[in-house]
Image 1 (cartoon, rainbow, N blue to C red):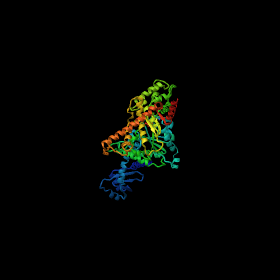
Image 2: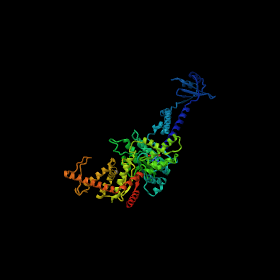
Image 3: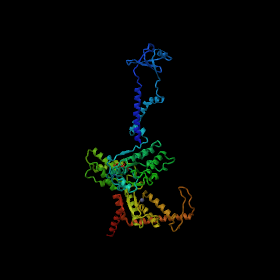
Image 4: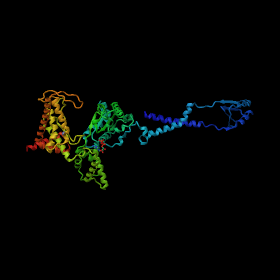
Length: 597
Ligand code: ADP
Ligand code: ZN
């Protein structure tokens, strides 16, 4: 459509220019010799003029030898009588005045031309700073053509699970029709979430590069301008462009800038952002299976996104891009080290171990700093010493976050997580431990992940009690090993209190209290709770307390009985940062073997 208008305007300019020129030249009169009026009168009386033409007050004639003459008559003249006397043939003409409309139009031609030329100039300069005026509603997305993108999945290291999850998208983009013909459900939106610098943008680029499709990228903050409606129009433009280049990838970085939870923005709301978000939802819902456009968005604040964005048909596929573990860091370092020359003494394993909590971007930055240092020292190879200085440089520039993890913190976290894992492992009937990690995730310094064997619809008392034991395992391990407790278990303790109280008050799981529910006054919405006697309140408190103490004791017993296994798991965590179910199994087997000897 835009093409059509552009052509139309070009033809308009040409037509106007032609008209203008034509008008200019056609106004040029023939050459007449002007003759005084009295001379004309004499000639007329003497019958020297065979024929004249009268147009208003201008009289013109032509002599037989082809010369043209004219004479201007004064108002109220007696030319006619003289002409009649001289027997002259008179042609009377009315001056051909152009229609007033046409006249005005002609007067405006130069202005119109200027305006049109300016208009074209602006359009062309749309992307440049000087030409932004006309580019308000354009998406301003950067486009990387497949020929120019050399990023592939091999450039993305250390986040194998995320890579695995997006491979399907690559396959689809490579060969969309096979999938759609088979009636397969194709994802329209993929949300990549994780800490800054973990390689989300890189991964999205790699998907495009691997599939050989164009890659549109734009940041969410680019949508939000001060003028209402601009963001929405940019979104529309972006998707129109995208559909033209399909199959392709549209990458929206910092989606939280537009996709923040609508109520989270505080009172009143932000009209512009909301309009933009709505437009985005409309566009995504409008996708047809054969549009072959996949939207990839990235954020590090997945928790504040509007739930509407995550509904089926929108960003229903969510891929976590975690900070790399020690093995991942080693791989990332190696990928980036390919760009420079590295000395023989460099052991990437050692470097990876010395950079806990580093993101991929920080590691890339570290290699870059090392290369700079090497050049400045006029060296030819990156050495361990250079890498050490480069690391300090990156750390100094790092934001003050939980990022810089001291050795002691790391040790405590490892024991804490090992405690959770070991208690979970030893108690019968709990969900199997899937993975344990001491890589920070959001506010948590480490995570012990359990995955149920099957879906659970209801939880029995034993299961809940075991959960209490597992949750307390972290704190107990800290206490056993360091004889000291930290704030790291704050979240665990909160959940323990919550579950224990519900067991007694909501689920009737305490025999002393009996199968009754007790709703205390809700401090949040102020709803008055059940009225209960002080005796009951005390009973509830002591029952909750007993439950927790019991769980604590169980947890402590397990950990004390398996002290050496606790150390083994801790050491494995310190060594590898993430350990799997399989690895714990091996450690348990080795340990029981050792005991027998
Ligand atoms: P994010 O989008 O998650 O903030 P980026 O993709 O912009 O992070 O990462 C910035 C740079 O850091 C990348 O261009 C790349 O050089 C490096 N990087 C980050 N993660 C990785 C990784 N997993 N593998 C290789 N390089 C990485
Ligand atoms: Zn914990």
